[in-house]
Amino acid sequence: MPTASSTDQKIATALVVGAGTMGHGVAQLLAMHAVQVHLVDQSDEFLQRARSWIADNLDFMVALGELAENRVAAILGKINFTTDLTGKLAEAAYVLEAVNEDFGLKRRIWAILGEKSAPEAILASNTSSYDINELAEGVAHPERIVGTHWFHPPQITPCVEVIPAAGASQANIERVMDFLTGLGKVPTICRSAPGFVANRIQMALAAEAIALVEEGLATPAEIDRIVKTSFGFRLGAYGPFEIIDQAGADTYLGIYQYLHAKLGRAHFQPPRLLAAQVKAGRLGLKSSAGFYDYGPGAADAMRRDRDRKFYARLKLVKKEWQK
Ligand SMILES: NC(=O)c1ccc[n+]([C@@H]2O[C@H](COP(=O)([O-])OP(=O)(O)OC[C@H]3O[C@@H](n4cnc5c(N)ncnc54)[C@H](O)[C@@H]3O)[C@@H](O)[C@H]2O)c1
Image (tube, rainbow, N blue to C red; front, side, top):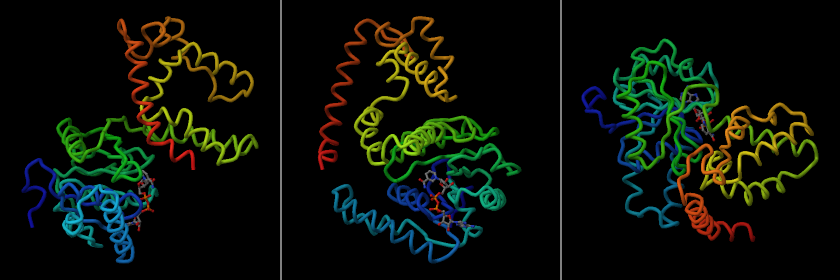
């Protein structure tokens, strides 16, 4: 078997440790892109479970017309289901740690990854929240440590947050970005900090939704319906800053001021950055500049772009909501 050190920079072999909710999906996607994968878990029972999840996913892709039936066996054949972490590590050019979100467990796995992997292999964690520098502390060759935070279900969801450790080399960051792009993902580099980007936002949203239920203002089903049909509908097309620019920074500021005065909660404190934008007259589309700059005609172009995207999305989701 070739070792990672005998291969060039192309990632042909990967190892995923933790064949659970995330690990099996990542292994599936890698295998679909002809990457040889060692999928490692602690017992044959977990590996059997992962194998049947992947087989089911692939069969359903065939049923949906997303995959040719004659590819299924070859994809499954790319995955070696194994409990032998230490024996297989040296073969992998990309190693993803995807065990449970338990700091002590991850540290124990990382000690093994550091010791047994090829020195030039990319070492990554799928952690949702831990600082990659803390997880990988003491691991040799820090230039190869680049976290890759995949989103559930990883075989489908486009985003991967790429989190370089403090010592990661630019060449390895680029190598990870190229690898993920080649897998059809949309990777974005994030600084290593608790929760990175997406989970800070996602957890803030969930906390407020839960608070609304606790206060007796709406049921979970009512909140889910409102979110999906309102700003959730828009979020697949526009991120929060694009939406602020469309709505108007002054309007947002006014809402924060009212909510903060009425509800008194720290997270509704009008953000200083937003207040500065308003003071500078950067209100968004209506003033030709906001978080983004808009040239002449940009507001009209943006409105047409928005309508095109929204009507296309509306067709896709309308049937779901009318059930
Ligand atoms: N579930 C999600 O939606 C999601 C999304 C993004 C990131 N994550 C992160 O991905 C990681 C994995 O989460 P998950 O949801 O897949 O967890 P999970 O509990 O579904 O799977 C974890 C797997 O790790 C295995 N494992 C535990 N100890 C092991 C060991 N010593 N050797 C080999 N395998 C071992 C377990 O047997 C299990 O199969 C976590 O860090 C989590 O925070 C999860």
